[in-house]
Image (cartoon, rainbow, N blue to C red; front, side, top):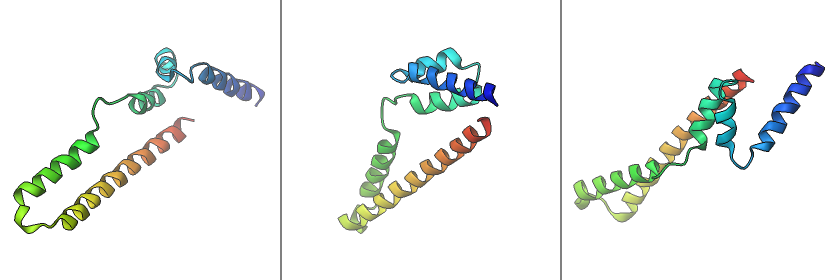
Length: 106
């Protein structure tokens, strides 16, 4: 039990060392925790564009061009809000799955 505590403390110290640049930690220690490293790389990467914003924007463009005569501005806003909520719930589900993976590794 003491050895496990020391091991956890060492990991915490190593994480603290890399707290400002976490991708360096995962590059150095990716062999220790492959699954956790993969998840970390996924969440630590910075996207050049916001895919979510592009998706909603393209759907808005489609709705306004193809259904222009039948949709009022409030209806269009409600539809886009519903799309955004659906996308947010999907992202939340993915995060929960990631947490389950991390819990199995720990």
